[in-house]
Image 1 (spheres, rainbow, N blue to C red):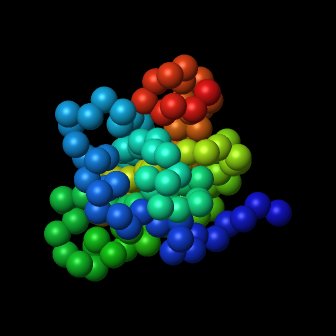
Image 2 (cartoon, rainbow, N blue to C red):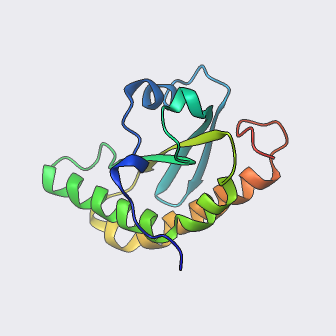
Length: 143
């Protein structure tokens, strides 16, 4: 049975790793966009990530979610969708000496979050998994 948990050890918390994902001058950061979801990703050596996990993930609700209740709801929906669809991505990266750092961003209207996140996020994760499988010395570093 696939592991559908999302313990704290799998969450991206280091400011240095998060900041690198949003640095536009870096050429080792990749991006996948599907509908209301944008996934920023970067591959780092395990010792730099400070974790033995193959994937570290963070979530951001976007600027349009002004109220705390809307931000929290969007983050909860993002975490749940990721938790349920993380296994193919984790299987793809298992056994590597590198860690994939991800930041999942919601870029839509908070009113449509409950309809769009459950469909857009799995598609974005599938596209990212495919890209990691086909990149040859690209931003991902996995081949």
